[in-house]
Image 1 (cartoon, helix red, strand yellow):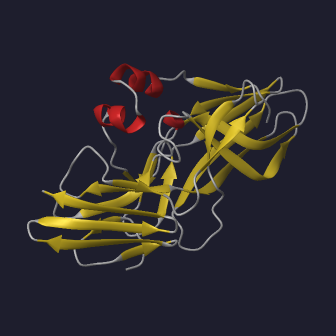
Image 2 (cartoon, one colour; image 1 turned 90 degrees about the vertical axis):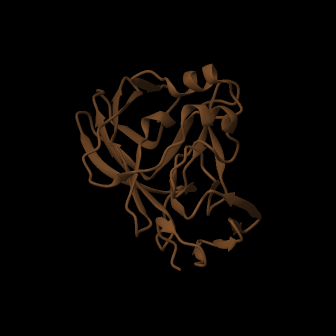
Length: 244
C-alpha cells in the first residue's frame, strides 16, 4: 500500500520512505510491526481494531523532553529591503505517529523517515537547543507545509536564513489519503536586528491531527505534570535575538 495518512486495516502493508508497517490479527489481539532503516518496533495491541497513521508534532524525536523549539531552515535565504515583506511556504519533512483507530489518548508509535537531529540556535554556551526540520525535497515523503510571513520593519536590509520558534506555535493539520499536511501561519517581524516570532491563525480546511493528552506527555517527555504544563505554556512572542 502506498504510504498515505489515514486508517490502516489488518492484513494491509503500509510503506513510505524506507519504513514499513504491518498490522496482523493474532487471536484476540493485533500484532503491530514497524521497521525503518536502523530501527524496528513490535507491539501487541489489545482492544484496538485498526490504527490511524498521521503526522506527529516535532517534539518527540530524537530525544523527547530535551528541547522545546524547532529550527526551520530558509533555503535559499530571503533578502528584504527596509519596509519589505513577503509570505512564503516552507515545506519540511514531518515525523509520523500511529494512533488507535478506536480512539485513545496515547500514540502507539512515533517514527521518522529521516534521521532526526537537533541544532543549536546561538552560541555553544547560551544557545537554544532546537529540533531541526529537514527541507522537503519531493517524492512521496511526508510533507509539512509551513506558511511564514516575513516583514522587515528595520531601517537596514536583512537576510533571513532560519526561523526558530517554540513547538507550541505549530498546530498541524492533515489530509487523509495523502502525504500532505500544513500548519498555521508563523509571523516574523524584524526590527533592530531582532526577529519577533508569533503564532498566526489557520484558515485551511484540513483535519487537526490526533493529539496526546497532557497527562500522556508526562511519561513520554520524562517530566512531571507541572513540568509538562510549563513546557506547553509560552509567551505570545518569541525573540530571535541570536541571529537571523
